[in-house]
Image (cartoon, rainbow, N blue to C red; front, side, top):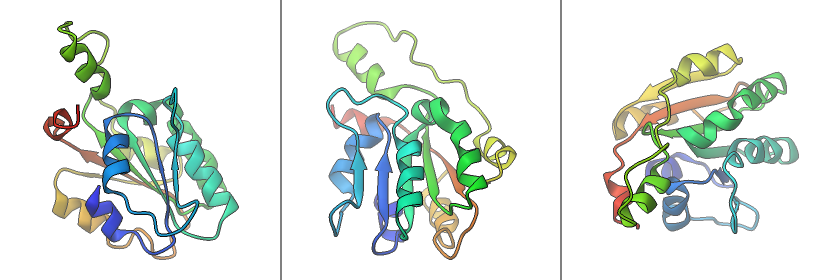
Length: 174
């Protein structure tokens, strides 16, 4: 989260989907002006992040970054074709852990077995390319830094970064 924030230029609008990463975004993402952070709250339906990012990119001149988990991203991923068709240079970072982690944490806290929380692994960079976007997979912070190094420089195609993550840091939030 801090790596993405550091790489994002002033005036970046950040949208986030629902999941454990949303909690981290609320804790670690600094907004410098009104309407730079779009987070669904209350009942918080999954699938908000990418459509919100597309709306922000259409309505404003500044850079846009969407933070999504692989579950929420999977619900709206085909909307990338719209972003590509419109020439929106937004950046989508998908925190890929193969699970609905927030639900897993709730189930574990209640002493329940993990049920229906696995997210099938999809080749997100290939999916992005098939929808007219650029796609890359990263597995560590240096890879993320490299992927973000040119992410906000005059891009006319969406960039989707699959960030393979370890969910151990999420348990400390719960």
